[in-house]
Image (cartoon, rainbow, N blue to C red; front, top):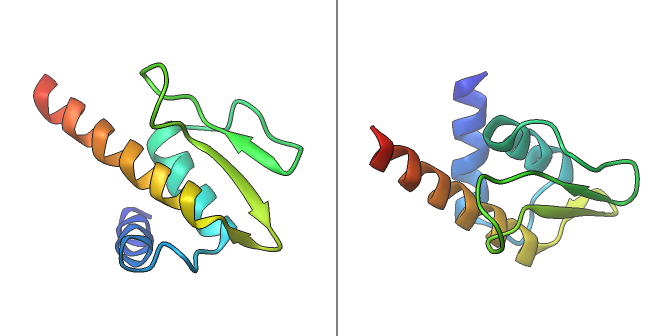
Amino acid sequence: MMGKIKDIFKQIKQNPSNVRFSDLCKLCEHYFGKARQSGSSHKIYKTPWQGDPRVNIQNNRGKAKAYQVKQVLKAIERLEMENAIKK
C-alpha cells in the first residue's frame, strides 16, 4: 500500500491539475486519517494545526479541484516537516 501512496503522491505533485478525486482521498486518508466530514460533495480532514493549509476537498465530476490538490500537497509537506522536527 505504501508504494501505491508514494506513486499517487509523485503523480499528483507532477500534475496537480488532473487528479482523480478517489486518488486524492486515498492520499488524504493515509496522511490525515478518515475524513471528519463526508457525505456531501466535500470531505474535510483533520490536521494537527489550526488554519491553513486546510484539507478540504471536493469532488468535481470525478476530479479534484487543482487549488485543493495544491493545498493538500502543502499540508502533507508541513506534516512531514513537523514530524521530522519531532524525531
